[in-house]
Length: 195
View 1: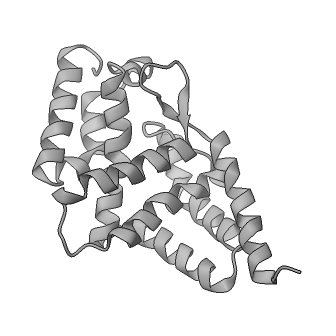
View 2: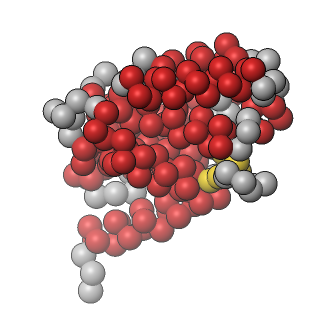
């Protein structure tokens, strides 16, 4: 007979499979369909590993990876909030906080507290690890949109100033990343992908 703790962990792992059904706004490069939350989180976590050298050596990589993989899981219940939908964004924090409580309550108490703490840390964005994750979270869709010639921006008539505001943390990040994001935005505007 399995322990109660193990069965709770399995229940949580089954529940997070639903992240594969939460679709985002960014399309997979060269494909017509949008990526889902599981694909986004996986991709951003790999990006964190590959681009780790551009961040402070003192940052805890394992903690950042946990944060990167866990923070979007709340969208299973709260849904993905499109970056440029001001109506949905006005309720995003409340919906996601309630979803975090609901989702992480499935876990055994020690893990529940850790995941809620990581979620809150990401949202507050004050630690090095949270800042790295927030940069990856902004860089990943920008990179996909760049790789797909601005399709997602064109379809939604996104303004250059909206992208600059949304990608602010990446634009203020490490030089290599900020230069890349700045170049993507400038090129997209020049090519008419951003108004």
